[in-house]
Image (cartoon, rainbow, N blue to C red; front, side):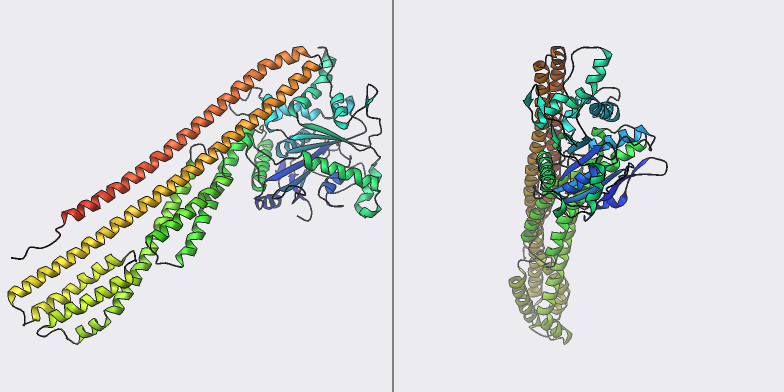
Length: 624
């Protein structure tokens, strides 16, 4: 993108809406995304900082008046400067607290969306982080009412799980002119932030009101840091930056903004969904639409529901992508038809594995294997179709070969060359030469035996007429030759059936290998998802333990003791979730094995019936 576009705008009725043009851009981004959203009061220079993060001087709209310039949420997608194979998505949000809007709920929704969509949330303020600054971040206290984790119990407070999914938090302070000292000692930006978020002891209403936003920030954003801009960047200066050349800016100014950008890039990670699922541009677009549609309907966005919705969309796309990989490869192979069955089966196994791999890369939460089954069934249908096309190509080639080899015989038949004494033996000799040449040239064709069987049946009509017209042969000799020809035809019929049997066995072996590879990839995918779920839970638990330790250190023993019960419940719930997920995976593997066994049983039955049909046929004739 060479410039930002509006991702989320406002309709005439005031409801938020996702812009289709922005969704189309995100749909094209298959890479993982790092999403940095910046929020803050209007006219605090957010857009300028976002332009710097994009590595540009201009882009996001800058303003020089007291009017908020950015409306809704604007998006700019650029290559990540430090993470190869990753796209950096910058979200510049509408300034909070603009009195002209007249709807405080609108600000809450914008803040909520920034939290839900980002992997790093940058809060931009001016001056100092004092009580007023913390109170201006009131939206954080409303998150428990505006975001749900689970859909099972709408009244339950599941905010303790926010830590699993919320973005890292960076508080930037513009125009910071104070000395960073705590108890007379120099302090870092992070130490300054933690000091500003320090809770007060006591249970009075005033103390509770003071502590509430601080507790929310500490609980919801355990991964937090601070960056102070220790030089003035007044609005009138910011407004001029749009037209200034970077060479005209002071080296101090550029150095500080560069340090800010490096901090953001370092602190920002790839956006993840519940259970550690990586978010691509396409998923981010679908998430934005899901959340905005939910908010516009008056409902509360639910992370669990969003994951389920994303899983359905992504898994359907993953099936299509897998089929495209398989089909495009088989279409290339089709140009070489006819081929031996083993060559077609070998490429089928290879492409089936690639298709499954493609599916696994972007699919998630396919807990009952529904979408993988769909991929498998569609691949098998396509494979049967390509086998049929290969057989048709083989049949045409074999028929053309026989037509060419038998052309002299056909010419002799037209001239009644064989209608004479001794003509039958001449006919049989020519037919034998045709079969011999045909077998040497078409012995690897999948339809070779079947086409030859049909050819010999057709020629048996001519053979019968020539045999009866051959006066050189006695009645008994004619009978013997007729029975010999019948035995020869029967033998060819058996060879054709045996070839079908061999091809069925080859197909069964190919299916067995494909299933083994599919199961291997499924096991890898399941192990990965369980590991990500476990790591997510461990990360959240570590954050809570650090929060509890900090409370104890600061003398809030009552609050720390209350957290002990919460931690036990958190641990129990994580163990239960992991156990349930493992059971789902086990059942899924068992179902796939059962389906494979049923499919193989059907093939074995077909194999058995074909064998019985061959065994029932006589293998020769007794001449009396």
